[in-house]
Length: 88
Image: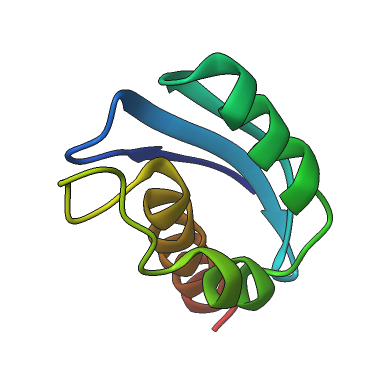
């Protein structure tokens, strides 16, 4: 399932990825710090939503209460929930 998440309070404006049985692949960010977000996308490729959440949830950026990686954690959580609901 292809999923797009609109980010909040970050330099990136959206995150797009595929999720299949909880496994996240093909992560891409719109906007944000290009090099850092390419690295995050590569590092999380093939991880489960739960693994990404456990590593990225709660990370902040400067004085902001969130970050692109925290937004990714929120996005994969929402996508995993949507995937489970679609299968029910």
